[in-house]
Image (cartoon, rainbow, N blue to C red; front, side, top):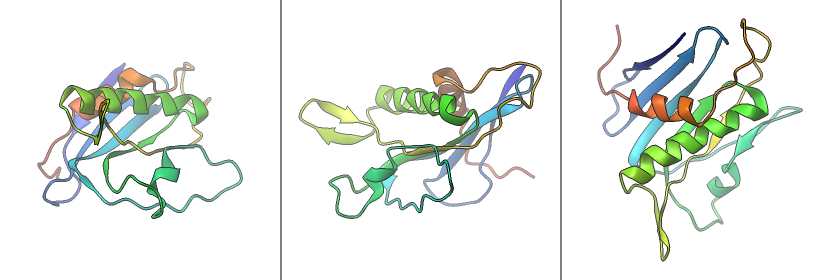
Length: 141
């Protein structure tokens, strides 16, 4: 069974949070959307970090803003969830402008949560897409 939850945990204008949970696999994906872009930074640590597009956040690189950040379960498999967030933003024309079209910038990080649920089903692109669809601006109480 899976569910998508929306609702921001903080009142920050322009910042929206959505979540997708797979209750059978005991994993999920959380997306922080800032469709108009925000400056991002990262400090990657640990013995086995799993990330995507975090090098773009280095100040000497061309890209200055991100449209979303994804935090997901599923270890290395879970990085596929970022594809769903990219799809969501691309459908809305949000991203870094290039001569070939807009490219959504979605840095992502994973955590190891494999083997906790009844099934092996790490978050994939559909989980990221559903998390993005579930974004909200209201505060959950």
